[in-house]
Amino acid sequence: MQTPLWDEPPLHSGGLRHWPPDAQGVLPGELGATPLDPAWQVLWQAFSSSSTGHSLATFLRQRLNEGAVVYPSDPLRALRHTPLRAVKVLILGQDPYHGPGQAEGLAFSVAPGVKIPPSLRNIVQEVRRDVGLGAPSHGSLIGWAQRGVLLLNTCWSVDQGHAGSHAGKGWEALTDEIINAIALSAPVCVYLLWGAHAQSKAAPIECAARQAGQKHLVLMANHPSPLSARRPPAPFVGCGHFSTTQKWLQGQGIDWHWGWAPDGDAGAPAMALKGENML
Image (tube, rainbow, N blue to C red):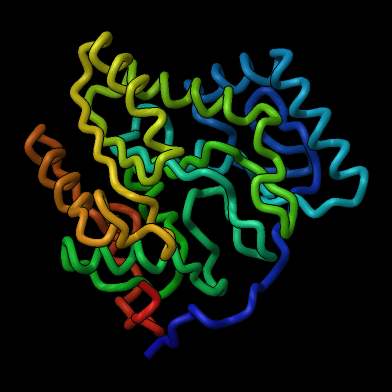
């Protein structure tokens, strides 16, 4: 039987090397990299050519030139794996993980071989409690991304060891454009907003989706961090968001369910979590 990877050390630092990407969202030196979906390319090109985009690019180049270790290695990875036309669920995080090897460009997700962070552990345990899905063999949520779950952070990069260090540098404007595009164009979408930061986007989402006549469901609860996961009045633990999402999408005629592997792939066998008293 495969050994769970929760407690193994990071395999690599996974830092950003060059910035900015080209018009297709491909980073310099990344030969053969997957370009962004055409719909995301339009948004990326508009942002990167704006004054905010230029300011962000200047900041990131400066941090790299100063020798800062910046995570993740591919800030656009969430868009790369979940095209706009495929989005069925949006999970909005705040800031990438800032420890070595943790951030992989998908909100709450860590690469295989990286110790699972407490917030992600709480997510995994809530999925198991709510829909009966066994724990995966690693902490990567790439399977969700490939099922149409956009795992988006509000801020898309961070200095190693300094949480929130890239907040207010321009990413937030791109995030708002992405959220607005989904609300206006996704015929059916569930928005999972955990914590006050994510919940600040609820009103704009509701307004845009109603304006466009799109079917949408907004679910809110505390952030899955151990600091707030059980705190009233809307604890994350027991929120039931995963079963509600699944049933609502199926009620809209979409054959969709949660799973750790890409849709249609059985994937690796489920594993028991270590340290299940992390809540």
